Length: 438
Image (tube, rainbow, N blue to C red):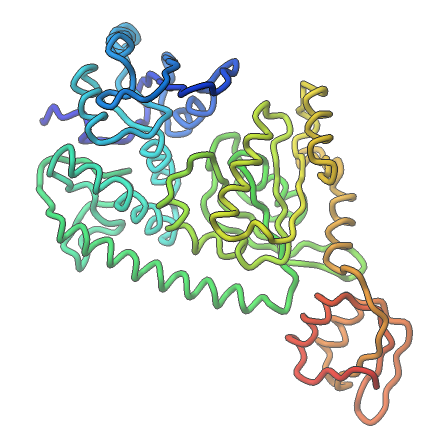
């Protein structure tokens, strides 16, 4: 059996020592590695210790200083740690030097997130996307540390690229069979073609829903999006108090009352410093959010770092070119807030946000009414006519417009309505023969 500690980048059921390097004047919070600890636990590791160092700049060779590196080694020995996880991104040479000094496997933040996503991937779509992200992020870095990459292999066994293994192995790193750059690049190209096919299918599915108003739940991981989805639609979505509990998009009908409804989608959660390749490869999964009429940004109001999490989500939305999309901020978990002074500050900082609790149902009626109002928009009074036999168009107008008068003449239904511009656009997509002013 090889003694190379990086043959297995999974951290399941391992003792983990956490390390964070603070650069410059970054404020020191009570527990600067609280999120890294949650990530490690989500990956299945047992956190046995924490080390924090403040520096003016990263040490070019080992990220931390020589003295702190020796402290990490000693603590790892005392705590019997199997893996050292940095809450920073490390270069291949830094990882190599740190592993040499501490005699243990070393992971950085991005590798840990990739490992979690690999362990959560259930559908073929998610497996392909995670594998591509692992390859594009990790493979070029690993070439700087060693040349054996068997576990970079594919999600379903042998492939046309000649690579074997699977995403269930949770990451690159086995040093038994050498895979050269050409084979890895071929695997990446194959994955990109397969994901492109999924992307095109997703686009078709989303476009098929253009007859409906759509909203997407977005937000930081573990903010309560799936619980809110269940409360609003009885979707039965999987919920769990851990980071990245779900990776796949779920879409359900949300009844707003008075015959009006929209399609609501739950999406994968975001996190700060999320690996760029992961965002890029999961673009197909986020297609629902990309084309949504309204984004519902769910925030864990009970989290002390709620404001930083809001900024992180807004950053990812900006990367997806969704920064200008109509949105509504939801301060969730209102029932779990312990620091009401912090909540007051949060509400002052975001005065248009709604306070809700997906668990207790508090504020959901107000949320439904606000979404209904936004969906209908500013209405204009006008006269419209559609073919009298077009039941879909007539039902749409009855649900999404205020109908003041209706009459039938020459095979057409003529309605005096107040309707929002967005609803009128949907009506034109729904019905080929809509006339104005008759």
